[in-house]
Length: 242
Image (cartoon, rainbow, N blue to C red; front, side, top):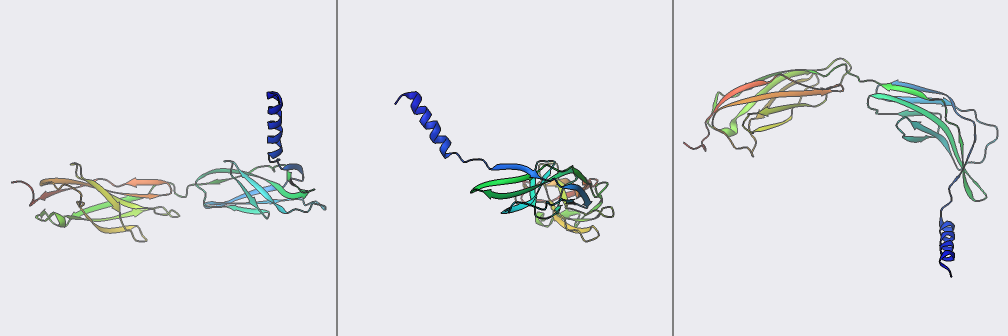
């Protein structure tokens, strides 16, 4: 067998095993009157479809929705809710899609895409929270480093309709020791918490140390940080060299 003949046989064999593409027929009427209604973080879509008097017997049938970012979903009725969206503008089109079989082969019936409809998810908050902070040291001087704590009191406030997110503190000594964590707030955004000045992994300094403490709160519009509250503390470290 010549080399050219062998190549032809291989190509024919490959074509015989290739999976045929589904036949697609654009024969259905397109949906119309696509509407988009925005409520908070959701966009609800509705449309109409002029169902023909005669249709093939579909094994699958629905409406294919395409979003402006390329995402495609299927809906079984003439309404669909796109939920938990981030702020931004969204545009949609819809078409009909049905699947049937003709002489044992899968056939897909579709329509043209409808005219687009758009919805905008707005940021619920015009700006980040406002936050106030007051810090008290529980003692003026410390002979025991493990007892060194600060009392944090303050208020994180958001506008009506906004939701307060995480509230955190940050502590920095300027000597390489820095840490932070969450603060518990009540339903009104008020916090009243105690925090440790040092973690178990910190190398404890001695003498006068200046602690810089801030708190950060966030809502849908973003985070905001309080003014820096500075506390000077005399540390009497029993492990420091004399």
